[in-house]
Image 1 (cartoon, one colour):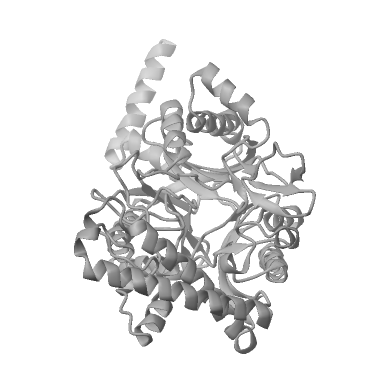
Image 2: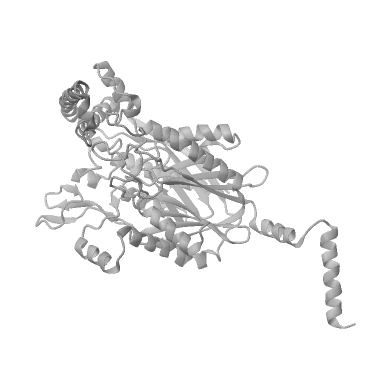
Length: 532
């Protein structure tokens, strides 16, 4: 008998065994893939958060109403589940949103909706983060101020209580009820989509952000200050050009998605809804790596960092003109290069069964301490602005035709915005004795030798740098504006400079609270690494 006949008969025999036992070769291959993948389960989904009509936009010292759509807003969901042994596994559900703030009311609403649709998902395993995107709809309200004004005889609708006017556009509450069900649906879909898979993590670099605080010879700092003045001294702080990357794979080793962690807020300042550079980044990555690729956006600690060049600005603008690219396109290519260049290495270091643990704890932070003199000054300012706001309200009510003028709402909402800021300082002073500390939720996750720590604040870079430098993990992601938002968290250096973001109106906690957050976060990371 020739050798070929022996091989042929053996092949027929093996095929018969497969068919007789009810298994096709594809099923056997799938089983081998599942066995290799181990106990980790990975699920992805996304949701469109783009409202069709005009909407109250985030950020600004007066109401901004959207005037169209530049590009879509997206929420991307990643579910990681480790089955563990005898129920010892854990779950992490990360939701990256093209929003300015992951307001606690939005997070709670999403958890409430998810609990109704998929009760087996624990709400505290879900963490939403925003990109500090100023081109997104607003989800902020100020019910405390509305109640205070009601006592003064001024009724302000709760859903318009952040800016004190109700232009003809979707309100913050309206957008919340538009977005929350979509995010919740995406969470459930990602949960249902989870399959055996693996992960790998890496560190890339891309110049995206720059410190926006300019310091002068007298020690004062200014946001986006001129660097061409004779008294320009230096840029106030450090810049971080790292890019944290977490890749996910299916059971065959095929790339399914990537978490991109960048210490830079999305700019988005304009009149149209936009995701800013994240839109181009997603498009560039899918062009290179496949249209089905999921990209989850995260902003690392970087409150004073922006995608805007201050030093050598003219040279930068010249190069963009010569290359024919927009700054957003340039950022997208830099980030895609970071993702793309590491991928061949990362695919050789996939972890199918990493140590996996997710904890969420409350860390108590000390409020910024204010003097009675500061509080008294803000009380006087509040009363002055309240009188001006009342007069503007009366004029509008007496002359409804004024509402037909273009952007009629800008002046009155600007007065209200300043009044609300003064009121916050007064509230802080009144609470610093009765509630000197405020608990904030912090999520800490271990995925192999990678740590992820999320914070409900816009941390100045120094605090994130301390966490990354002292963490026991090989690599650490910080994620700001996550699971709530307690405004900015500045350093002592920035408080001394008194630029935007480091004044009482912009903050709840000062440098003391920042250091407490650093130490508390590091303690949580230490605890995860101490577990066997």
